[in-house]
Amino acid sequence: MNSEFIVHPHPVRRALISVSDKKDIAKFAKKLQDLGIEILSTGGTAKELKKNGVKVIDVSDYTGFPEMMDGRVKTLHPRVFGGLLAVRDDKNHMDAVVAHELKLIDLLVVNLYPFQEVVAKSSSRHEEKIENIDIGGPSLIRAAAKNYEYVAVVTDPDDYTSVLKHLEGEGQVPLQMRQQLALKAFDLTYKYDQAISYYFRSILGAPELMDLHYEKQMSLRYGENPHQKAVFFRNPENHQPNVTNAKVLQGKQLSYNNIIDTDAALELVKDFKQPTVTILKHTNPCGVAISEKIEDAFKKAHMADPMSAFGCVIAMNKPCNEKIADYMNKKKMFVEIVVAPKFTKKALEIFSKKKNLRLLETGPLYRDPEKIDIKKVAGGILIQHADTRKVSKKDLKVMSKKHPTQKQIEDMLFARNVVKHVKSNSVVFVKNLVTTGIGAGQMSRVDAVTIATFKGGDRIKGSVMASDAFFPFPDGVEQAHASGVTAIIQPGGSIRDAEVLKRVDELGISMVFTGIRSFKH
Image 1: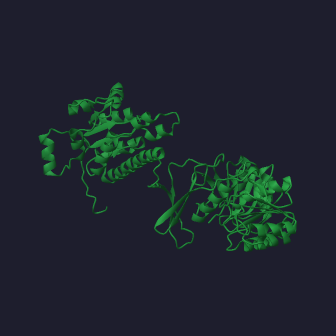
Image 2: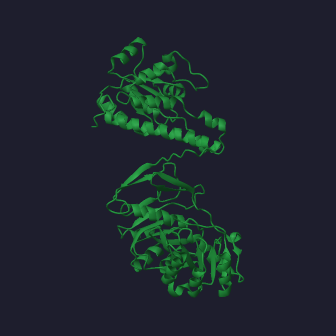
């Protein structure tokens, strides 16, 4: 036991109950009454308890002061807060209790007006939101939690059972539980105030303060490397289809690197509506394909670079079926993770023989338009809106003398919307909606082209190429053309654009500009 926490065994003789969420409250209060615990209550809660045969003392009768201002003021009174905050082992405090005829409150049961739920409703008016800002509730909770050595504060109906178990057995709530309940209470008021703060910032446009609230999901075996400790935290307000909310159907615990790679893979396939599969290593795709059937997209993505697929993460935007599972078995693929919106029953039966293979189910995929990216630097963080921009045909501007064909445009758009998911500097080669070569994370663009053409080999002939940023020199274009590239899509914007375009025309290939750069650091 931490030395700063002193054990104060005090029986629970009196409870104050005032709840917005009335789930199981009557049943809980009846049990308290059976244990001989006196109950104080307010307004709607008192009515609910009385209706269910629970004897209560109205707080207004106890304080001698009526509820007023449509319920805005009902518990804000010294007789209430004195009963919560009195230190039982302090003579001065107890003299004040006697002098002012205060009732000591040993158990507080309070939950708050549903501010977050009201704000989330598009139909709710500003006035309704303001009225759902709880004042008395947080004040009571903070008072009881501060005095946790003597008072147990219950803010979650899910805790009723465990609290009753101790009251029925020992007549009191043990210190360790009072500490845990106090922590839970302070977490509640923190998040509640944060939600109110966010609401006012949203209507006033005040971004000067950024609060990030995450809750521990799990301890990880280690971080990026075995000598690094790591923990996975989750934003409790996040309800999107992503790695954080994915259901693990089988396999070992996810590692630090697994989580990062799965996130990168999922975000890529979310960009496409047609059946799409990506096979990914170290946050970069090594194969991506679109097809009419998800199993065909899977085979094409795998064959784009089967050597790099060893120990990969696979993501798809349509349900994973038994044809994919059979293919993986026949090819003896070593795969770390398969993540999909759903798995067929037969696919799960086949995968069940690979005990270490992790299967993650997300439900239907869609992109969060409000997604933000957060990157940490020493002593601070950088926050930006995620790069959710998807380039379409209307964004294209033909810059070369030779115009691309419709088929080349389809391949270029696919390549461009893949390249934004590849670490910069990056290029992606595509033919027939399948990647034929990927060059990732190079210090020069021409090196990215060289690596991609080396990886793709003969498959590059007839491909298009997408670049995440402009070509500063013609050398990257020349290297791509020498490998068989027929059309190029890039943002443009270099001071040497004219020089690059002159060389494009000399080589007899097509080039389109998008005006949209997609660096990924």
